[in-house]
Length: 492
Image 1 (cartoon, rainbow, N blue to C red):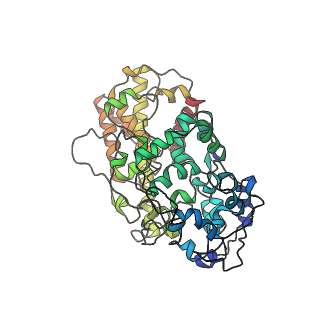
Image 2 (image 1 turned 45 degrees about the vertical axis):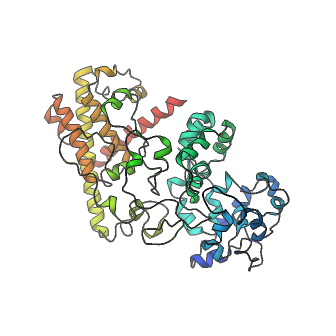
Image 3 (image 1 turned 45 degrees about the horizontal axis):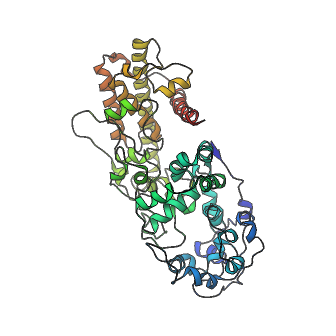
């Protein structure tokens, strides 16, 4: 599923004493308006030099002042300060990391300012640019899912760029997102302008980016290397983040929202980790029966308690303390700035929980959710067996076809089943098994079961399925894999 790059740690210094020490050791062609203080010649890694275009290979370093002439105060840039002006206020400038440290030697570009002789998009968005200095962070990042490209999506975008490139690449291609979404957002462009620029892209341009895509998200997907943004970490640090780390406004991920809206939501993780327009209305459930109508990355929706079927009367507890904790996603998934984005009970759950308390609560929540999901699945299978003589025919049509079976006419599937299967997959695709939002998870399960109650599916089938934890996880994972195969087959 993921295209992993050869790890370059051998060429990256990992013995980092302090961030300032590392950055000062990078060189980079001078600080703001001054020549380099460390000899003027950066020492790039091998992987970095491999990113340079052929016309730049024999270029020499000229210093940041040469760049300021075109990219400084006299350079127009709609909606934001010119790049070189904004850069002079950053930590990079303070520690003498100049333009050429990231964009490569500039002598050829000074002589002829074209894109073919300077490191620019798509390759400049690679994490290898930042890894020259930030070796420890890069080592963590390489262990994350962000560090690889989702191969089926890349292939889809390359084969059909006008459909899949212009939509999927907004979150599945680090260089595309940085160039076409993140930078324009930082520069203050409107969503309509951003979407218009994407729609105007040629198929050849998107196919070129597809061939260069090695990472789903890179350093510059979250950080703007050129400017101070004012989006502070939950500890109050200025890390030049592109989006806020906490946002409880769910307007941008409301049911049916367009792609230009739900891929620019102002939340550092939620701008990609959301259901992308999912709609739980009966109308949407009746018309979209091939597969789930939300994207498989609905973590932000689950965290905020939105986009599940909620037809039950009564008050809804939308979210718990996890949704309003300082930093939201980053609080738990980036304890001690861990760029693996995996939760460590020792660092990600403090100060609300001790490591032991967090581990125990997580285990109980996941176990209960697994059993409840399998009980719901068992009820759906019971209904399908009673109705069609085949327990697999409760599912979405593409998932049934993936099993080599013929799905029944969806008009014969009552809305109660469609509601229940929507909530089943909504909880399943969140992947936290209730941890992100225990209250909303329980509520969605109650709604699903209440719908099956109306169909007269036996109460006995609501009992927890008697399986080992490994068996439970195996069944649930098989359903996730089945839906992914169906999605890939739909575009092959």
